[in-house]
Image 1 (cartoon, helix red, strand yellow):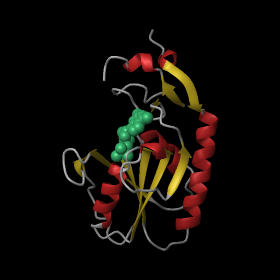
Image 2: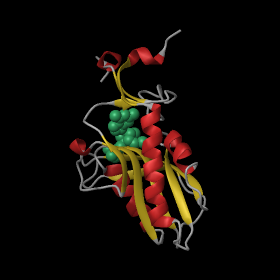
Image 3: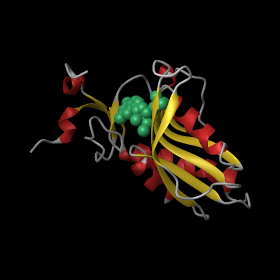
Length: 186
Ligand code: XMP
Ligand code: MG
């Protein structure tokens, strides 16, 4: 059997630490939205955020909706300001709602910058972004999430929903992928 753990150089965030991060984010979200009087719609960005979304939403004790989108962003090399391609869209309106986009990790910042603009343009009352991980050193556009689980250094991480070539999403922790796995493949 190929044990996925053998491809992990080191564990960056254990299951226990991830639980603590979700607790802290849920408390921040409760402070912001528990008594807003508006509908709260979480929009989880597929596929990477699915584990994070499941853990976070089970810590939210007040009414909220969950929707999914699948998008990809392209950099300035393919378009002057970068653009976003929507592969799976919402099936509902977010007009008047408080929207919180759930993302696994922010890298260049392009995905969330474009996606938050797109949803704001659909008449949401507010659009905020909640990310499990943030790599500020990689930012290419000016973008900051409203709720950040943990800032991490510029290393490639997998697990807890994050993949390399569609593998490792099922690891229960976030780990640094051993460079030997992708050596010669990029
Ligand atoms: P932006 O638009 O912020 O996109 O550049 C963020 C997306 O980049 C991917 N990404 C990673 N995926 N491990 C991953 O598994 C990483 O270390 C990593 N860094 C960036 C990911 O798809 C994220 O949604
Ligand atoms: Mg992603």
